[in-house]
Length: 102
Image 1 (cartoon, helix red, strand yellow):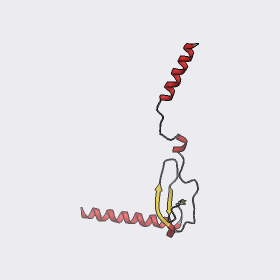
Image 2: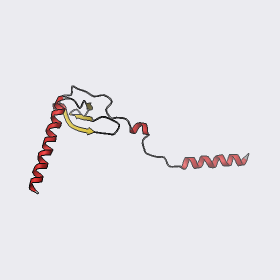
Image 3: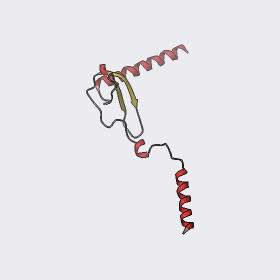
Image 4: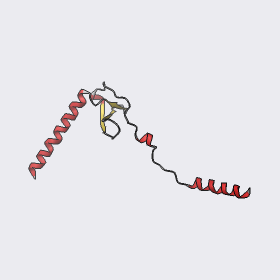
């Protein structure tokens, strides 16, 4: 009986000394940041935009508003589409100018 108790105590002490992992469970890693999106966020109320593209989620746009709230915006919102189009054109123009200088 003492041998079984000693073995159990040894097993418990080893189990409590095993380091734990700081990694998130798979179910949390695969969650999308934006579960629902808003269509009616005015452009003038947005302080900053963050774009996320993960393998298991569609293209996501997170806006930090001037009141420090964060909301997910529908990527199909008209003003956001125009913003992205203008930004892409600026990048293309900048690359063309850089290539001409070289």
